[in-house]
Length: 98
Image (tube, rainbow, N blue to C red; front, side):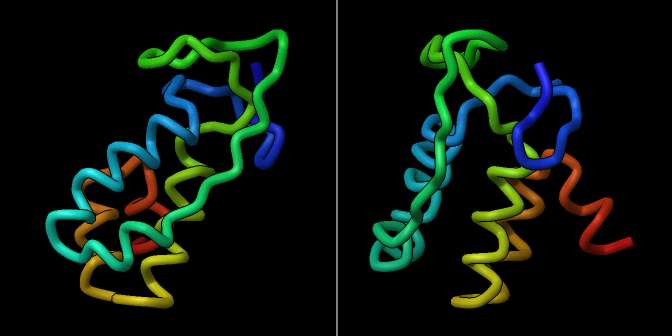
Protein backbone atom coordinates (compact mmCIF):
# COMPACT_ATOMS: atom_id res chain seq x y z
CA UNK A 1 0.00 0.00 0.00
CA UNK A 2 1.24 3.47 -0.82
CA UNK A 3 0.72 6.62 1.22
CA UNK A 4 -1.88 8.90 -0.33
CA UNK A 5 0.20 11.98 0.55
CA UNK A 6 3.74 11.07 -0.52
CA UNK A 7 3.08 8.01 -2.72
CA UNK A 8 5.82 6.04 -0.94
CA UNK A 9 5.27 2.48 0.29
CA UNK A 10 4.08 2.36 3.90
CA UNK A 11 6.89 0.64 5.79
CA UNK A 12 5.92 1.59 9.36
CA UNK A 13 2.22 0.72 9.57
CA UNK A 14 1.21 3.05 12.38
CA UNK A 15 -1.95 5.03 11.65
CA UNK A 16 -2.11 8.78 12.29
CA UNK A 17 -4.56 8.27 15.17
CA UNK A 18 -2.28 5.86 17.03
CA UNK A 19 0.76 8.04 16.37
CA UNK A 20 -1.03 11.14 17.64
CA UNK A 21 -2.14 9.26 20.79
CA UNK A 22 1.49 8.41 21.55
CA UNK A 23 2.60 11.97 20.84
CA UNK A 24 -0.20 13.26 23.06
CA UNK A 25 0.95 11.03 25.94
CA UNK A 26 4.51 12.34 25.64
CA UNK A 27 3.59 15.99 25.08
CA UNK A 28 0.88 16.08 27.75
CA UNK A 29 3.56 15.57 30.41
CA UNK A 30 5.57 18.54 29.12
CA UNK A 31 3.02 20.96 27.67
CA UNK A 32 -0.64 19.92 28.19
CA UNK A 33 -2.05 22.97 26.39
CA UNK A 34 -0.08 22.22 23.24
CA UNK A 35 -0.83 18.49 23.52
CA UNK A 36 -4.56 19.15 23.29
CA UNK A 37 -4.06 21.08 20.04
CA UNK A 38 -2.52 18.14 18.15
CA UNK A 39 -4.76 17.15 15.28
CA UNK A 40 -4.18 14.49 12.64
CA UNK A 41 -5.76 13.52 9.39
CA UNK A 42 -6.55 9.83 9.12
CA UNK A 43 -7.96 8.61 5.84
CA UNK A 44 -9.08 5.10 6.73
CA UNK A 45 -9.50 2.81 3.73
CA UNK A 46 -11.11 -0.54 3.10
CA UNK A 47 -7.93 -2.04 1.67
CA UNK A 48 -4.26 -1.65 2.44
CA UNK A 49 -2.02 -2.05 5.43
CA UNK A 50 -3.45 -2.45 8.91
CA UNK A 51 -2.13 -0.38 11.80
CA UNK A 52 0.08 -2.42 14.12
CA UNK A 53 -1.68 -1.02 17.18
CA UNK A 54 -5.40 -0.68 16.38
CA UNK A 55 -5.79 -2.77 13.23
CA UNK A 56 -7.56 -0.07 11.19
CA UNK A 57 -6.73 0.08 7.51
CA UNK A 58 -4.65 3.13 6.76
CA UNK A 59 -3.59 5.25 3.80
CA UNK A 60 -1.19 7.78 5.35
CA UNK A 61 2.33 6.75 6.35
CA UNK A 62 3.92 7.45 9.73
CA UNK A 63 6.48 9.72 8.06
CA UNK A 64 3.81 12.07 6.64
CA UNK A 65 1.88 12.03 9.92
CA UNK A 66 4.98 12.79 11.98
CA UNK A 67 6.04 15.52 9.53
CA UNK A 68 2.68 17.27 10.02
CA UNK A 69 3.01 17.07 13.80
CA UNK A 70 6.62 18.29 13.61
CA UNK A 71 5.58 21.31 11.53
CA UNK A 72 2.84 22.14 14.03
CA UNK A 73 5.28 21.90 16.94
CA UNK A 74 7.92 23.91 15.10
CA UNK A 75 5.46 26.78 14.71
CA UNK A 76 4.62 26.67 18.41
CA UNK A 77 7.78 25.54 20.21
CA UNK A 78 11.02 24.83 18.35
CA UNK A 79 12.67 23.02 21.26
CA UNK A 80 9.75 20.58 21.50
CA UNK A 81 9.83 20.13 17.72
CA UNK A 82 13.48 19.02 17.90
CA UNK A 83 12.76 16.67 20.78
CA UNK A 84 9.78 15.26 18.87
CA UNK A 85 11.98 14.61 15.82
CA UNK A 86 14.40 12.69 18.02
CA UNK A 87 11.69 10.60 19.70
CA UNK A 88 9.31 10.02 16.78
CA UNK A 89 11.79 10.01 13.91
CA UNK A 90 10.30 8.03 11.00
CA UNK A 91 13.19 9.42 8.91
CA UNK A 92 12.33 13.04 9.75
CA UNK A 93 15.84 13.89 10.89
CA UNK A 94 17.26 12.80 7.54
CA UNK A 95 15.20 15.46 5.81
CA UNK A 96 15.18 18.16 8.47
CA UNK A 97 18.76 18.16 9.61
CA UNK A 98 20.61 16.97 6.50
